[in-house]
Image (cartoon, rainbow over all chains, first blue to last red; front, side, top):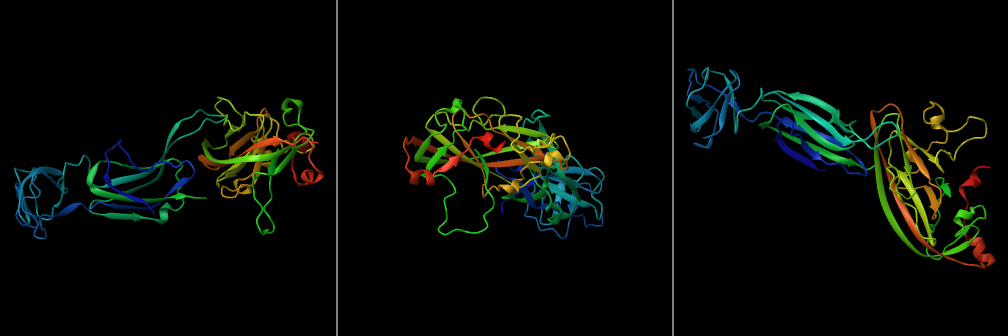
Length: 189
Length: 210
């Protein structure tokens, strides 16, 4: 059974999981969304505008330089200038890193809050019929939200879905931290 | 000739070929019109065959239909499956994948092959009852076990397969498997009784409308 793994694509650029096979329909068999990314909490008691400390982290020294650290709790972000095994340094972040603030680290600042709304769509063009001309169609088949730091795995919910054209995945915001995997099969009967 | 072969009640061993083969005989009845004088009332032997599989699909909105015209041409609905040589006979079989649709057969256009005799008992897809009169479901001729056969020669009137999407789904994808058994036929002017007995008789479509 084929499957495709990808990070949440930007709005307006859907991920095509399977293109139409003209001799059959497509059935999505499972979808998994991992929205945990690189995440943790600021464990130091003291607030800091420049250093985030996570005593549970195990970074490689300076591997995060140039990445963006997002304080999910306050909604602010800053570029990483250095890191140790369990600290991340930035020039300054608005609102400070406060104890128990949730952070995520991404390659780029996310464009929207970290909860991700994922939609499976059927994309096809109808044929000319007696009553209608050919027309492109985008039909939403399933929409669900995977919360920040959460994972979702759907299988039973997909069993009655049939895709006539291309199987596509839309997400409400591009997010390299949200990893999506979709399995599918071609319906032979 | 249009033929819907019933599901067999028993298996035959050794199996009988489903399609016309080299060496087989075919006889066109006298009912074929003079416009198809190259076959009307004549007797042929098949000397060569060539099998050509094909697939077409139509995505259609609910309660709507598409007329699939098997004849040749550039029209939007024409599939150009007919022969253009006098010495060709195409045995074409069709099978459909399961879906929420039915198929009506017309030959020529607007003349349904499955009308009954009482006035008004003609299939009509816009009528809630008569859309099922004479309608063939996909499982009557499954994609992997074709049972619907059409025999076409040059200049035959258009055979129309009307694919109608039943209400209840927004869109449906009708997948039609096609298998064209191209037969090159050679006329035998004086067939023997044995040859006549073995021949497959090909009736003109008007013969099913008495």
